[in-house]
Image 1: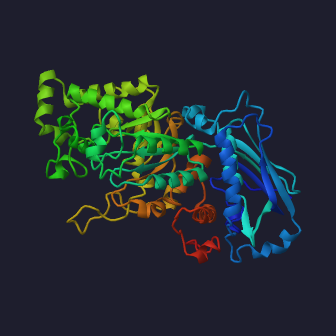
Image 2: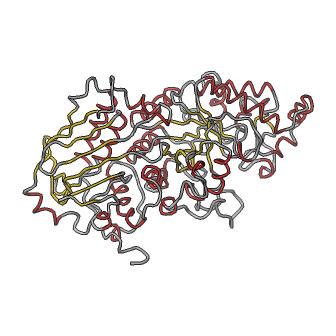
Image 3: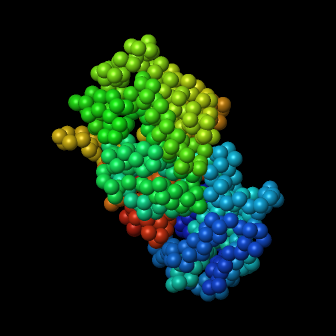
Length: 554
């Protein structure tokens, strides 16, 4: 029989229905079903299926064979052995477009590179109890891909038998918010391409849509820009620690095939000290000390945005990088601008005196010039919140604003009429709580203490203190990793499975129950581990196998 299971309450007991993110609508039964040894995924009704959909089907079949994930209960599923002996066998999953689809199919990669408001991710999934064909239907290739991701989470292994004990299963699903992201800073420390690709895999398993790539910063410039070769030649930590043009294209293609758009960021005009290594004429107060007076982090140095030459240089740089990314969005940053840097910079003061502009007026002209090249290239500019809240600048109405300083700032951004992404440090910064990293400071903690647990992130309300009109401007949110104390050795455990919390929050909507979510998040972590991602343990295994018994109220 079917039981309504919209909140997957059963997961708090058995953790068998361990789907993440939580589907919009879900019903399950109590019948055992096993995958046939010759199980296959059928696309015969789709004419000319895109190659990235075919590849996604191949990956799904591979995961079904290699996950071999045991159920997270005390006997690891052994109590189901008898029911599995007589269970029906599922031999096929059929993919097809629903009635809302017309024309030739487009690729996952093409659809995810479209504007956020045009992406269609919804799907329906059915798994009958009698072994007849399971189905995934959607009005887009991207929707079919999201359905495949869910299908791969339904199954567990017992003695080399792949099974579920909850057939029949019926799912109707689509996201509440279109933007669900993760940001990685590759400038404080370099991350090999293989680590980025593995991260993209993990993102796709929890239906994230955006890899926000903070590529460069004051400490290093690891990005090859063919029109400006000296930037990486003199700004990277080493010749082997550079993302080549081929690397970038590989990352973009790999992400797109997994339903992920790459949002590149070249932060300007702050966080640009490293540019002085190649183009010193464009950087104010380079290496000024004490650094804490002139920058938020060492080394000091910011673009001389009052200079027409520097403005043209920056616009050309942004245009060059932007042209290599097929997506619709590009971030020019704009955070943590330090005005003291310009107060001591003689060329900046001379430019201001010559034009009669104030520093803010010069920043406005610079910002308009830089963003105009993006608009001309068909891109939507993305900025950090200071560009809206701290300065009176002329920004395109289409500009998307990243709220990062505090969740309390989101309403003020929305009040100004801008679409926004929720990325507040008090909920989504993964680097918080690791202790201070600045030297000769033994008693300091990280600036954004304490550690942000998955439970903290999961309880976030994206539209707190907003009017209905303002709430409509929230397009989603993201977890972020600034990497002063991270590199390849601890990337996986510091990100996963914590970042999955926002993936569900912005897919399923706020208001989820942490006690009901925890068994499913354990499952996410264990499945990631089976697939080669070093997700950290959330609790002792004793607790993971006994859902609810380690809750504080138990």
